[in-house]
Length: 413
Image (tube, rainbow, N blue to C red; front, side, top):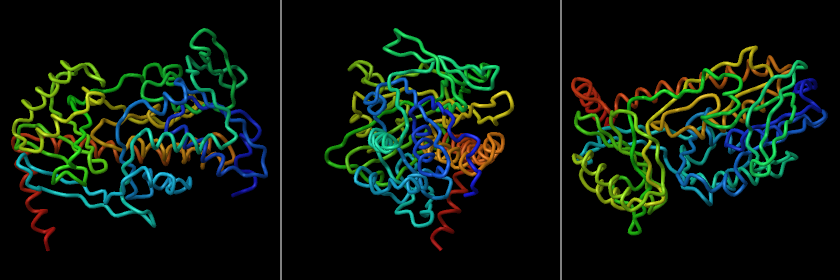
């Protein structure tokens, strides 16, 4: 590392809005990569939820991928966290299967692990990964302010950024100035609303998912006992995504084109859960067992109705000087790509690395955008391909069907 790299922020103050995967990766990577010959910047994290609440919310399973250098397992390896995570996770080949309604395998994608990673995919609950990252980040010299949501931010005439914070359960408001504001406060970012008020709307893809997490004490049925998979209807434009975790737990998400619905997540009442199951079984009536068994086993704490929304990434220009947006605060993927956590981890690591490798904020942000925006665009474009594929009808379905048949023939050679 060049002796003057990082000097521009040495001894100054960084505020991180949000203890998300992106924010946690950033503060941990910055501590790890910082040139010890320079004064360390003061880093303060403001998180709207209390510590345990931020860890426990959203009981879903994540796929942390390691098929390329642009994925989350690489960051966890760089942060020296693989050994901490492995006891709480399931290593997986990363294979993606495509099935017909009667469970005939139509196609498959078989990624290979990047470098010396132990697997192409690691499945882990969000709570376990979040707790491990929080505990790692808390070992840094970062100052933590849990239960302190950011309310707004503004640039001051002296070039600093002022952040308004709610404390003491909303009874007090305080302001804090910083030299760099890292916005990691999620898809509905308050910081983005302050600096980019016209960039707050997420775009509806035209598709809505309903689903949940199912517990099957006797074990997951074949063929969905191991690999992530997509079950397609025969041209009706309906698909179901399966995400197995461990031996007894699987996430499912049935989707089709429909008018945008209101977001709802568990726990559901008995009546709400019964209505969701009935809708799923009726809509997915072309899907043979074990589809019905999985739907019926849905944990009432986990159901959801989720309109698939997204937001494209933006580059940082002069109007954002002093503020950098990472993770969902910058870009939002639809739920057809289970890589949001991967992108967040990479964003956090890359921003920290570029701070430590550059000699000015301008060159840092430009280098960061050069890494983060193409990475997001690749995944974004692929997600649209997957949406079109999984919900294909008519001639498009016929085209995909024959294409998958050709792949199966050549794949056997």
